[in-house]
Image (cartoon, rainbow, N blue to C red; front, side):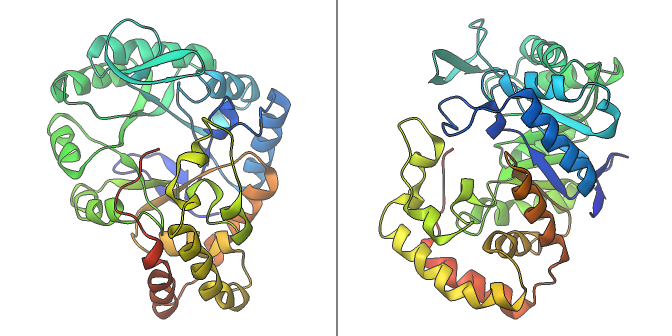
Length: 331
C-alpha cells in the first residue's frame, strides 16, 4: 500500500480508500444489502491490505452505511481514518430539496445549525467521539461560506472533527472556502469516461495543496468488464440512470475495451486496474476512492498501485475512450 498526507494535515491515508456508499443498500444499490458481519469482513481485508481510510455519508442508505460501520468498527476504531459528510439530511427541518428516495425527503443545508446537527447524528451512528475528516457533501450557496466554515472550525476546536473537505463543488468554491480555513481535500467525480470536471479542477487543488479524491473512477462497475455494460438494472438503481447503458455510448465503450485489451496482457492486470492506474497518473496528489462490497474487488483494486503506466499507453487509453466520454454526469 502507498500512503499520502491529506492536504496540509498530518492525516496519513492509504492512497486507496474504502468507499462505503454501496454497503448502505436501499434502492440505489439494489443487488446487495450487507450485514454487520459482511462489513466486518471487509474491514478485516482492508487492514490486511493496508487500507486505513474509510469514506461514508449520512445519506448512504439513509443512515445504514454509518450504522453498519459503527458496529463493525467496534474495538478497532483507531485502525482507520474515518471520513463522513454533512449538509444532506432527511430531518425535515429546513434546507433545499435535494431528492426523494426510499420514502425519505433529503434536503441540502449548509447552515451552521444543520452542519453541527449532522455531525452529532453521525457521531452517534458511527459510535465514535470524533470524525477524522468531515466533507461538505454538496456545496450550497444559500448560506454564507463563512457560516459553514465557522461551524466546522468550532467542531475542530471541540475535538469532534480533525479536518475539512468539500464534495460536488467547483474550483471557485475551494477558493472561497480557503478564505475561512484549510480544506484538506476535495472529493469529486472523475473517470476516464467523465474526466473533464477533474481536469479543470487540478490547477486549483495544486494551488492550495489540496488532495484530490476521486469517486466514480470505475463508473459504478461499467469500467470493470465489457459484459457489465450490457447489464440492466431495476428502477431507482443508480447504475440504470448512467449514460453508459445507451447507444451510441454503449457501443463506443465496447470498442474502447477492445482497443485496450492488449494492455491488460502487457501489464498483467484487470481492466479495472488499467483504468485506475490511468486515473492515478493524471494528478500527483490523487486519492482513489473506490466502492467496496466484496473482498475480491478490494484485493484487485490494490494491484493498480503496482502499475507504472507509460505515457504512450496512457495516451492510447485516452484516445480509445474519447468517443464515449461525456462532459457532465449526474449521480
